[in-house]
Image (tube, rainbow, N blue to C red; front, side, top):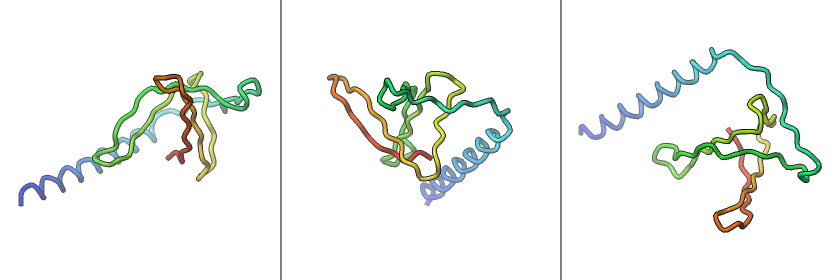
Length: 102
């Protein structure tokens, strides 16, 4: 019935919104970027700060956004390269996870 049509319309609107955002993103001026250094004194680790997290739709997946120490820094990864992150939880314990960014 109408709930199926409403669901389809919502999915179509989200798809259109995503395509419009990607199109707008392609017209933004590109800024100079610098690969982020991974220093020996940090045992090869870089530092970043969690800026935001949000659930992706009604899925179990989460999007995490991080800020690097300088705005021009990038983390140049090859397609399919895994990224490992470590952090301290609320009790000061180290938590670690590996992810494939998209």
